[in-house]
Amino acid sequence: MKGNPTIISALNELLANELTAMDQYFIHSRMYEDWGLNKLYERIDHEFDDEKEHASLLIQRILFLEGTPDMTKRDPIKVGTDVPSMLQNDLEVEIAVDNLLKQTMALCEQEKDFVTRGMLQKLIDDTEMDHAYWLEQQLGLIDKLGLENYLLSQV
Image: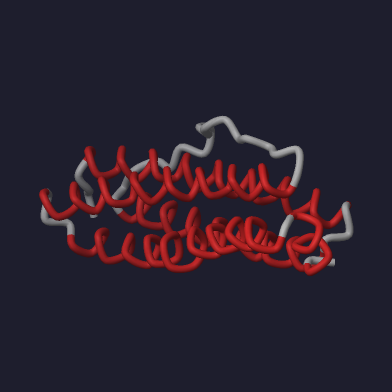
């Protein structure tokens, strides 16, 4: 099915953001694992898998619309140096993806591509309800408990 080139371009921009998030979660998860922070490792590794799934959905949709997925573009990743900066950097990526998802969903409505918009709804649900919410919660726990107590809870 020949898709709208504007929507395919927007989906490729989203793909770049999802791949960036995936790369960042990948390195952060392995850092947590190396530091022995097993709970953080397991959660962030799960987020890495979610981002792979999001990228896969975008690739499938681009292909369905007879576009070419662009796997070469990424935004620069921000590797943190400690747990708070890692969580904050991951939250910033999720906020950027959320904003781009909303813009792309609005474009889909404008272009009357409701199937693509519906597919993007799953991504925004994961982004807002799961990923960003959890990251905000962890940063709040660090503020409430203190970093040392938080880190002890993640071993």
